Length: 222
Image (cartoon, rainbow, N blue to C red; front, top):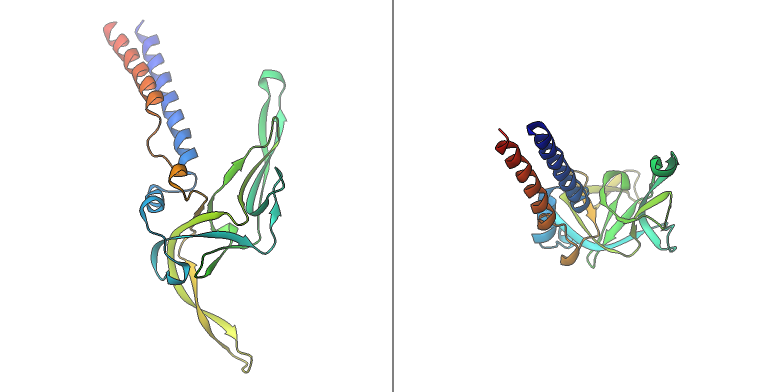
């Protein structure tokens, strides 16, 4: 009886680890723990007042050429679509990812004091997910036009050059805000939708007790 009980403990432990990994993947998305803490505790900095260091900017999304959501025709500022195909039949049928399409047009976040331009390729975006209805083969991740979002990252101010109308050379046109590293952009701005760092206690306790009972049973068989 000893080996089967240990095998049961190992299988239950792996299931617990897998469920925890899935839980944190859903909660954190592209964010690090440091960024989650900044999202919860850092006071928003007006865009015009951001100069250097880690900041949290809160504003609304805008873009020059909005997209149209596949579900409901909602105007989107930035989105990502996952296209799938079905392989196999019956109980063996499964969705297989074929391709991913991402927005390429720049967009911006703005508040009452200013605007910061963003390139989708240089952002880590925590999208809202929409899996469609029924057996949809397209999952859409999106952020809507005009949606209130938070932007977290290390910033610097740098001079912007512009062509002077009366000169052939370029002249300084002010200081633009730029991110030292790709920032994280998230729709989670309200307390009720903030990432949770503690998993559901019931499921973890049940899994842990299952592992403990299996190990105890194995030891008693020695």
